[in-house]
Length: 178
Image (cartoon, rainbow, N blue to C red; front, top):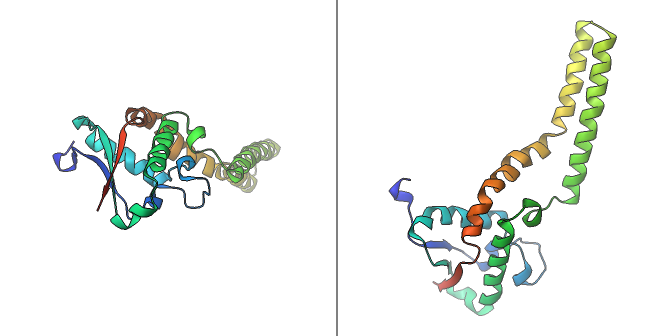
C-alpha cells in the first residue's frame, strides 16, 4: 500500500454525530443503524490503519455537539451496527418492500419474456420478427437490472468485507471534541 495513505490512527471526522446515522430513523440513538456512507468510511479507515493494530476508534466531533450527545448510546450503536455488518447483508441492510417487489416482478417478467421470445423464434424465421423476439428478451433482462446491480455492488462486496467488520466490531470508541 502507498505509504501516503497509511494511518496509525483509526479515526473519522464528523461535522455532526447525526452524520453517522440513517436520517429518517426515529429509534433511540443506541438502536439506530449507521448509514451506508458512515459504515463504508469506517471500513475504509480501518483498512488504512489496521496494520498499526489500533486499540480504539476516535470520533472527531465539534465541541458544540457535546451537550446534546449521549456518548454511551453512540458507542453502542456503532458496535451494534458493525457487529451486524460482520454477518449477513440481509441483517444489516435488508431489502425494502419496494426492492423485494421489484425483484419478483423482474424475475417473473424475465421468464414471460423468455417464453414469448422462444415462441416467436419457433413460429417463424422472418428476420423482423426475430429482431422483435430479441427485443422482448432484452426487456426481460433489463427488468432484472436493479437486482443484478445490488448483487454486484452490495452483496458480493459485503461477502468479502464482513471479515474486516468483525476485526473492529468490539473496538473501543472514543470521542475527541474539537
